[in-house]
Image 1: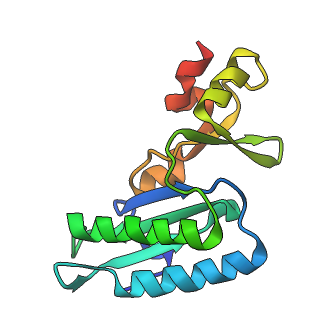
Image 2: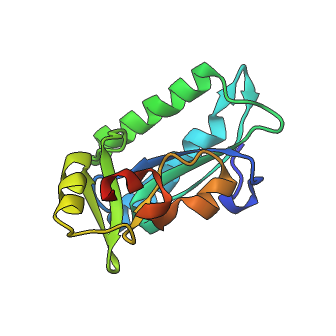
Length: 161
């Protein structure tokens, strides 16, 4: 059962999928349709899951799941990963590669390999004040508070010591 993302309780579980590139306007519309269709039928042990999504910056897919009534199961999580893989193929995106970093450079978002991000930190092209997206947050509350933070306040801080 799909619900507006903003209505999910703060302890709801989330998964963040950063895109290798921004979504174009036509893709945003198609992504909304695909996500609505998938989440409307998403189940765990034949029970509907209460879920929502966001597409912040037209660069991320954020899935949220209210686990107060029905918890995600291994099979339901596997189904969501297969769905994300299908989106990767359909839109020629990279969404599942966790060895990339998305960060702000001025008003623009950059998406670099972890290795390139480290090199930029070493060269002082970015610093501990650089706003990064901490895609390891796992609840709606932590997403709202600790997702978009200066590198010094996330796991990225290790590259600035």
